Length: 125
Image (cartoon, rainbow, N blue to C red; front, side):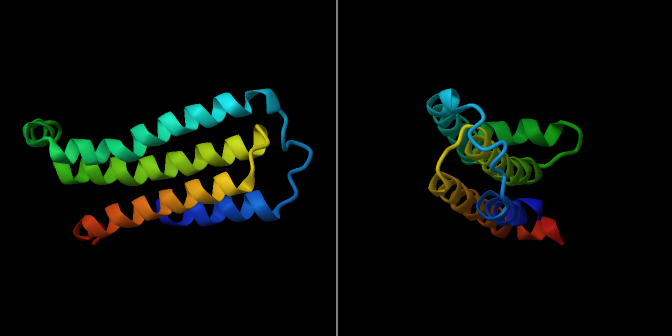
């Protein structure tokens, strides 16, 4: 459930709390950080969809440590959404990125976390 609340909290911290002493500490890394964020986001948000579509991989998940494929995909989906919004927060604060990027990544991360939480809602009971 943290992955559902974190985008809202991190967005409110980024826009409302005065972090001016540390904001833009590393502006020379802003363009590199944005590209790395994009690559990490594609990997973290797209990975669970790829795993879910690979039927031969599901059996190997079931055999390991009693974990079901549903639990692994749910954890990857919600954890990946949390990681993306956290990295976007760090890039916005330390690289001095615009808040609109933070809002966009937070919205996308929230939507992905809601999707995986709704898809595997039976695991949350």
